[in-house]
Image (cartoon, rainbow, N blue to C red; front, top):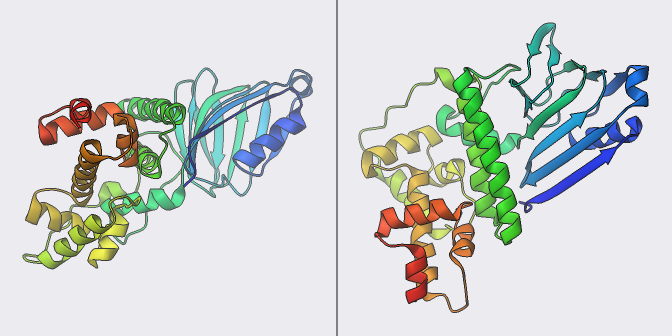
Length: 319
């Protein structure tokens, strides 16, 4: 998984601008009004976080965009000051300023805007489906073009995107963008998407756990303890336990009172504490937190206090 990186571009050349958009998002055809060509400006400020990206895009002028093969990655576009008209399989969707839409990968789209001012989030579809497996088990994740389920969900999505972007840039500045820290941010984005937009997980009930199957829990715990420094997710753990992700969730709750990922976080926290206390080289709390999967040092400190009743910085000073 690649580290956090930033990309900015500005041009007044329509051909150059749309080549950049093709490289970032999708092949497309574009039709600009003559007046739009003469006054064209494209500005992009993009933060790539692992295999996802959060980009703010300003495109001046009236444009008709045809994406016959759709976007390369499942994306969410969130408008700021401009409207957007979308058409997908003969279904029209008109977005006003301040609204968002989910755009699944490969969904053919036609778009029209008088100008475009938006934040576009491109997700990693493989990781999205892996994270959705906690809810769906072996059933596929099904999503469609459309808006959030409510105004509150819209706000939740925008706040999550702002948090992930700011945290990713903080990791970049502190040189602590470890694979575990980046993966935790991508999981946060995926969870927010599933909570914000209607999808097939909405109709899935919680599985019932078999009456007694502690061997799967034991296998899962052993696997977690053997590789806490790897960017594991629920699918990895369930494969090692030889049960489905949803079954493992139910088994863990029944036999331990926790979730598999909660157990993974606690094991990582124990390793982080050991490093703070016994590291043979100078370290900071932020470096240790990022190495063990916390993208935010404040949240790491909170989890540390809840687990051990002590501040990590105090323990580091005493070590």
